[in-house]
Amino acid sequence: MMVSTQRARRVVGGIAAMVLGLGLGMSLDRSAQAGENDCHTNTSAVERQLHIPNGLLLAIALVESGVDGVPQPNAVSLGARTVQTHSRADALRHVQAHANSAFVGCMQLSVKHHRVAFHSLEAMMEPKSNIWYAGHMLVRLRSETGSWSQAVARYQGGSRNQAHHYVCRVWNHLAELDWSSAKTLEPRRCGEMNPPEIAPKTRKAFQQAQVAANPE
Image 1 (cartoon, rainbow, N blue to C red):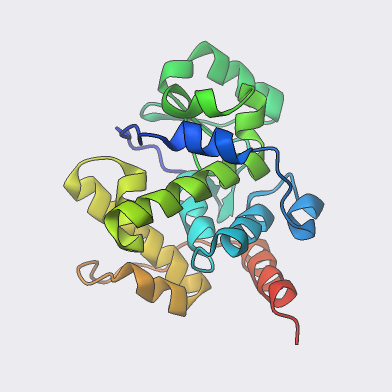
Image 2 (cartoon, rainbow, N blue to C red):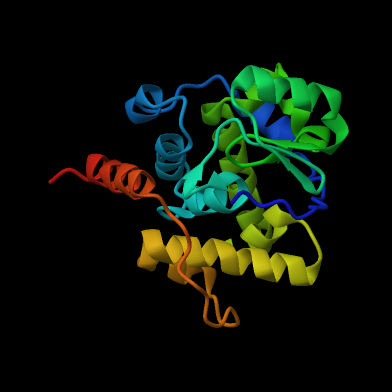
């Protein structure tokens, strides 16, 4: 199920300007273009381009917007409430009515804090630009904190306990996708966790992306 706990994300200084300067319109590689309407294809493409550990963005997307083990490009959360949408147009109607409390897309970006970086709400929800922005945010946070674990905690933006629980949930998903990458989160205090729900098609898309990126 998609996360519906209230998130008090902090504003990350300079992110909007940084991403605008880089240009959200720049093209990703062919694999992203081929699957531009899904979350998993685009997370893999951005991970490669920004040198993010394999599967980390996908793990975050699964925690943020996953339903039945599949991250959802039209996901919308309004504060503590998750809204089940059936199309991009349906999602946009909810967001336009509650912009200040809305989190959108694969990576559940805060409309209030990050809307300025996009030329429209629709662009903010497009998987390619939504994930590209989140990827740059994560890289910046990693540079500021010195670790991927702290970067993920800052991405969540809640209290210390909330951030710790969030990092453990992301680690739990990442361990199912790529154990080598999961070790970068240093989950020393997560304890035992039940296997996360990751749909077969999500696993398959992730594996295919890894093969495509590393052909023999």
